[in-house]
Image 1 (cartoon, one colour):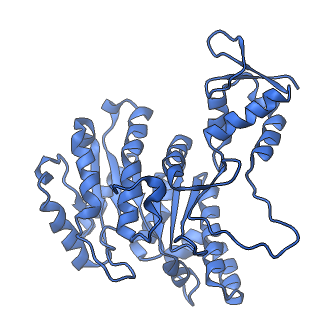
Image 2 (image 1 turned 90 degrees about the horizontal axis):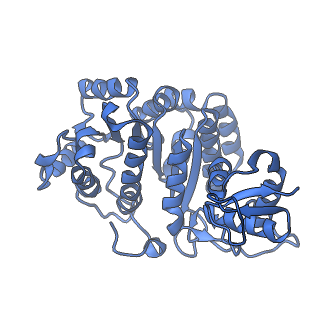
Image 3 (image 1 turned 180 degrees about the horizontal axis):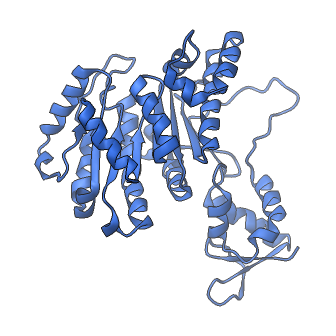
Amino acid sequence: MSATEPKDFFQVRRSFMEIKQEVLVLYFNTWCNIQLAIVNAEAREAMLYIDLQAGNLQDKEGSAELPATSKEYLLKSIIKSPLLNELVRTFFYDKSKIMLERVSEGMKALSFYGELIHPPVPLSSSENKAKMEELLEAGCPSLAFINPFISGYQQQTLVQAIHKWHSDLFMLLDPESITKAVAGRKASQHLVKLFGDRLQVISNYCRKEKDKYKRQEFILDHLIGVLQEKEYFTLLFKVNQPGVEQPYQYLLFSSPDGQAYRSFKEAILPYCTFQEDDVPVFIANDFVRAQFSLFEQRPTYTIPNLVDCLVNQAGFYKYKSIEKIYELDSCGTNYTRENYVAAFEQLRKAGKIELLNAKTMQTIRQPTPASVVKYRL
């Protein structure tokens, strides 16, 4: 992990591997704990971490990193927990056979490799791929690091992941690969299956739109739409260099589980920029644009907008805690737990609600996530 503070991490341009190591490792243990809590751990056959971009180590500046680096911290976190060491199965892939071998050799050279109960499995053969798919078909929870824009196998796996396996998805996407894969003359059969009728809409738009940034955003909007149709919660985090408008990486997290989604959202918050009302914008180094219009574009997510939404939901949220309302209401929005506390404080001052102590049900003045909301509307 980086020695820098999260808020400072993206103050310099980071390589693919640095971002992957910083953010994915940060979230991995949280994801494992969520899965263990869903079902009694003793009933678990396995939990899968699937890295389908294990060897993409070359960034645009031409620097290369050791193939073991991206796995070292993650594998260390597995062996630190006897339960995780028993349950977690790791599979990895790269479209370059040479790179896949380098990654495999690099991991075997790690000093603690022999402590792993289940050594990482390279997806270099149909037998190993079948072994992974068998576990997925059995319903084992999975977290997949995947980029559907760079290889057919990743595209095929993504289609299966969202249609059959309901995997949690962690995508670190290079902007150039997005338009190259989707907006070209002929998309792969797997992308046709993934996007369906949306592919023609994307193709028509990309032929007319010359701005490559707008084309990338349009394609990502449709990918998010595909995931949401499959009842996935999605969060897109844009990685900008300081002072540069266009992202050089996109991080897209998707999960069918609200808790997994909220946990990732909370994990990425320290890297985000914030509006004046403390609502986060999921961008590293948000680019401040000059205003040339008489009408300023207002953000979608603001505390006043949240207050209005909570008033309209009075019948549904009465006598629920702020924490519970946050869990029910925040998925798919930019709002944080703290934003809900602030919004209900405004409603309390306006006399539209009372806040109650969760244990005694006595009226209180200082809101906390545990406070129970009593509407006066």
